[in-house]
Image (tube, rainbow, N blue to C red; front, side):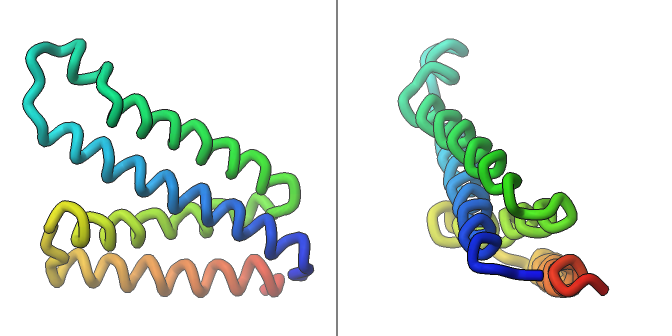
Length: 122
């Protein structure tokens, strides 16, 4: 069952997922730029900072798993797909097609069903 500690650790895990999504957008922005050579492509501040964010997101997940059940972790991590789609629209001007919208709806329904099963023990 859900207790106060679990909610706090679930928020930590969701925060890690959110910042990981930010890092993905940063890497996509970096990939859209032209660089003088391959080394500059990987050793630039945007890419390095994005990987540092991934590193911290990993620690959020590891820390959250102290309390969050293993059955619930992947469900919370799946919210990253939603964040990336939203941020892609906002920051990259990507279009959310009908097909992508349907996929996001399926993900949201899956998260709702799976999390209710994991939290309520169905």
